[in-house]
Image 1: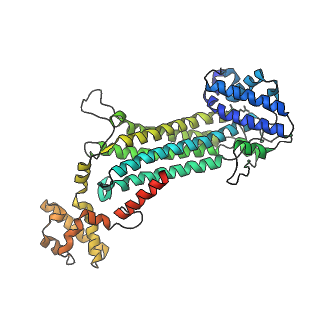
Image 2: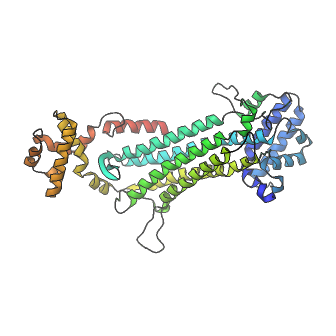
Image 3: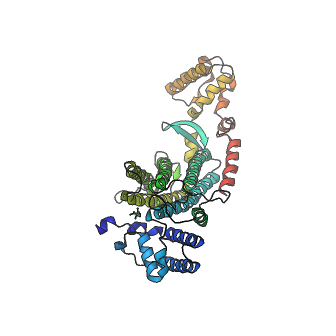
Length: 446
Ligand code: ARG
């Protein structure tokens, strides 16, 4: 039962937050006169010494004391007699809720900075290859030409939404549970707002934010689930990015050369260089989704309020945090070390069929309804296939025979630079827009 019920093996990492919470709580107890200033100071000094010991790796954790909270309180009691008053007007239920909210605020900030690091590495690759065009794909079929930067900027958008999501999670975490007690608060005259301010649970104006229902506070695990969700969705994004890179790295595409340090050879086939970092990014996303699912399932059948089941809420959260940090770093490293194969990109994008839609637009500009234009270009594509010539090399008579609106200038459509320039609207891959997006991301990512 001891091994079964202990949580100190994984919740000991909450120690800095637990100590921060205990210092704020004892400061509040002194402020309202439940303990003396002297007792508060002794408690603070004892907690500081314990934190130093933990950070130095000298603290002895005892699984018989079950969790991080009991381990620290016991160690404090051995040093400071006043420690016997620390747990006044507090329960482990509001204590652990507080520790975790402090943890989430910290974790969201760390992850956001790491994701920004990955974004910077992606932006750098875009900058170094700002003249490279590639085919964009739908259904994994060559669709239309885009600047490589446009494709990479799509990743920046996905990751920026992830950062926004972590900011929202941090905001939802920003309410102080202390004072909720085990379930129904306390009979003692505490000052919840004071504690909240001590711990930084404040709004933009510095006003304290304290939770509004003691029962909800100790039962609520929404932020856990939201955090795991933000990690899981980040996982979906990096998995899709990784899949692009795996394809681009294959001999079939050969658009990119991934860094050796992030790849391995095959133990059997000497010619192989496997895209390990990308495959693992794709694999880790499964794990991040699993953690979210664990938390959803853990919470779903529980009667209010705290139930011991909730001790199981921490391993998936910590795992999501650790893996998300690693993934963001490895994503950054993969892009930093990657090199584009410019010749292969240019060869792939020179396929004139990529501009078939532009040819239809050409007819539209001559007054032809789009459906009719689409049909005419379809016929031209079929003729080109039959004659085994590239679309832009078809004899003019062939083209003119399909639709009278085709003039001698039809072939100008296949000038790639010209085609790109025409994509001038917001969100499109035209050169003016790309320039604007470079400026926007440079400003945003510093
Ligand atoms: N180790 C416990 C957890 O993580 C702390 C809260 C325990 N509360 C209780 N009433 N047993 O959930």
